[in-house]
Image 1 (cartoon, rainbow, N blue to C red):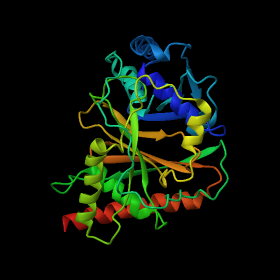
Image 2 (tube, rainbow, N blue to C red):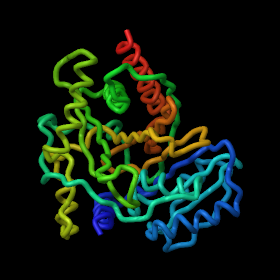
Image 3 (cartoon, one colour):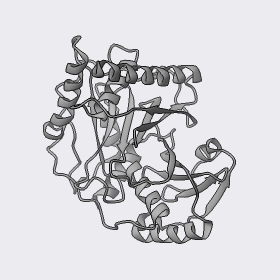
Image 4 (cartoon, rainbow, N blue to C red):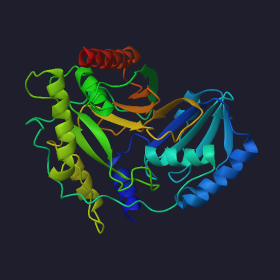
Length: 344
């Protein structure tokens, strides 16, 4: 199964220090009663059998921080917690699936409905580097600091009304984050959903692309066109790719290839999902604490619903909290500035 192959490759590339577990938390208007949650857990594990190797119990925690930083007992085990009687949090290893898979599992818990079936993948060309990359690899944000297995996180809500006509929220967020990074050589490492049907199929349905700023100073509208162009071309150029179905890597050679000096891992990871169809009703907030690859000291997960984008910045504990807060504040400021300029 290709999803399993991707999970194996993610694990091979993760390194020996950082854990692969991710967490999504939902603050709800009202929590389903425990007995109903237990019934829906059983249904979710039936629909998504990868999650059924271990029993999933509902735990209680005093804080999201304590739940997020406790390691998973096993890479195929999920954990579910209720935080202070108002927040439902799911923890899962990236080995099993991506953030969208976690949302599919949570959707079953909230609605009692889900669609079984394996991931059907898009057809993508062989790997080839982006023509937009720099000659020199990008320097990762805060990558001069030590790599540890401890992470912290900060959250932010960004409210926005209707976007200016002809513009895409994901592009505006991407540009705002690129403008927030201090290094001249900067890029975003973006997970890309490569499912044929966006919201269908539990497992690892991701590839990735690097997203670079324009090399010369251009207007905001032209910069957004530059971002949009990269995203469209990446599906046809080989920047976004999948390994062959029968790929069987030599572990040593694969790790050497991943750590080649000229590889460009971007400045930090940035993932954004949007609930355009109203799949998640009755939620007050949704935050995602991402796993961090050893090439990155931070990652941003953003989720948009009904004119609000919930942003989570996950960062290595060695990063000073003030530096992380500065990045998040600058991201918000750049986002508002771009919107204001587009509306003027």
